[in-house]
Image 1 (spheres, rainbow, N blue to C red):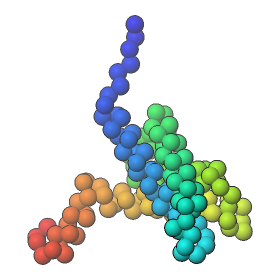
Image 2: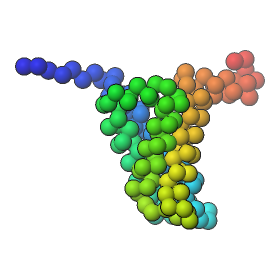
Image 3: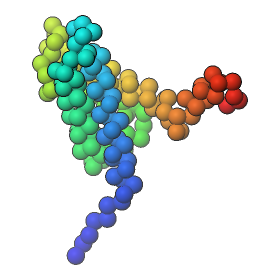
Amino acid sequence: MIGVRVDSVDWKLRLRLFVQRFWQPTSACLTTMPGNVANVWSLAHWGIALQTGLGTGILVLLLSFTPLARWFRNRYGNASIVGGLTMLADAYAHPSHFIVPYGEAVVTGIVSGLLALAGSFVFEDRARRVRMLWSRLGGRPG
C-alpha cells in the first residue's frame, strides 16, 4: 500500500497562513465598507467582514496544496495573491456599496494586499522591527 506522509509542520504553516489571511481581509473589509462609524460596530457589517475573511482564508488554504503555494514565500507574491483572493471573496460575500460595480471588492482587495505587505515587513523575523522599536521607546539598547 502506498502511503502519503503528512508532515505536521506543513499543517502548522497552513494554519498560520489561514489565520493571517483571515484577519487581513476581515480588517480590510471593515475599513473599506462605506457608511458611518456606527456601521463598523453593527452585527451585519461584522458578518460580511468575517465572511470575506473566511472566504479568503479558505481559498488560501486550498492554494497551499498547489504549486502556487511557493508565491507565499515572496512578500510581493503573497500580497498579490491575498489581494486578488480578497477581491473574489468580497465580491462573493455581498454586492458592492460603491457606485462602480465591484468597486468595493477591488478597494478591499487592495487594502488587504497592502496589509499583507505591511505585515510582512513589520512581523518578519519574529517581529524584529517591532522589538527594536519597543526597546528604543523603553530606553533599552536594541
